[in-house]
Amino acid sequence: MKAPRPLAGIRVLDLGQVYQGPYAGFLLAQAGADVVKVEPPRGEPLRRREAHGGPPSYPLAFLNTNKRSVVCNLKDEEGRKLLCRLAGVADVLIENFAPGVMERLGVGWEVLSELNPQLIYASGTAYGLSGPDHESLGMDITVQAWSGVMSVNGVVGGDPLKAGPAFIDFLGGTHLYAGIVSALYERERTGTGRLVEVAMQEAVYPTLLSQLGVMHHEGTLPGRSGNRHGRVSPYNVYPCHDGHVALICITERHWRNLLGAMEREDLIADRRFRTNEARVAHRDETDGLVAEWTSALTRAEINEAARSRRVPCAPVRDLAEVNSDPHLWERGFFETVDHPALGSIGLPTSPIRFEGQPSGPLEPNPSLGRDTEDVVRDWLGGPVATERSTA
Image 1 (cartoon, rainbow, N blue to C red):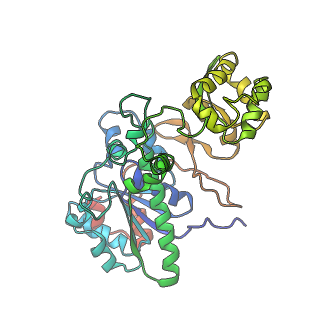
Image 2: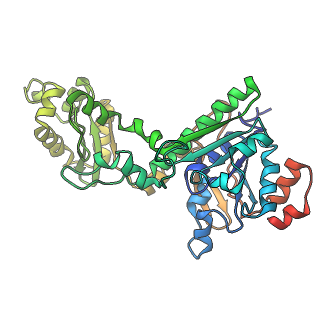
């Protein structure tokens, strides 16, 4: 008999919108929780884009597998009553509205914790629930700017550049999941819930550790360095016959092995390349040497030569290549889902694996409000006419 998933039986109200909150809910759902996505009558922003004539939303499909959907109008008294009743029997509530929104609606932490002292109330924001900047609006790009990320991202001498992926949103969602699970563990011992909050600005700060190290040790502000590393060489993206490869040498063994792959063992004793410090001092010459070798080969040839000698290397792949990666499919990270709007698509499961629990199966994201009556019956014991009309 298959064991239940770790969070089976945990009830979650997911009021998250766009990426940060919904990703925390996604991880909880993949871990077995009963996650109910609570949306206004017009749906959350990702769903509204679709409703306003946009294409079916792949992000909405990605983030909301294995969830149920309830419509709840928090601007209406009956809608707020419904949320309060659901929160009264929930284990977790997730929201990533701007600070103060839930309080102004009358369904913030203080109100809901009074109704349900065991509730874990999880709030994701840009800058936190306290401090002089807590009311500032923040999106991924503005947090990248404010947090210092953009100051070190981009080409040498170029303008500040945001990272392509919305990674700060997802760092915020991942930390929110960790906070929720920690609070659930604490509740097992104390019987009491708590407010958990994550600020995206604080979640991204540890990613700057290399640049912070440079600032601390050298006493200078780290600038933009493109694909290079300030204290390691070779560390770059190099051209090849059919694209590019990323290649680095962290240890001297890596460098000697790379010289072997390049058939340039004659350079092992060369003073310009003898140590990492020397290679950093002669970075242009080091990169030129590597690029001369990579330019004559394909990505696959370089990757094979480097991997066979245990040199860290990877081709720069496009998203289509990643989506068809046999490794990810064999591990069960991707699953084929027959989606009612998008057709047959590959969707990811959680990157968190539990031994003895295979990933999936994935269920497509629900249509808006599809499960309102079922959730009211399952959680509250029966349908209520006013709740049906609110939905």
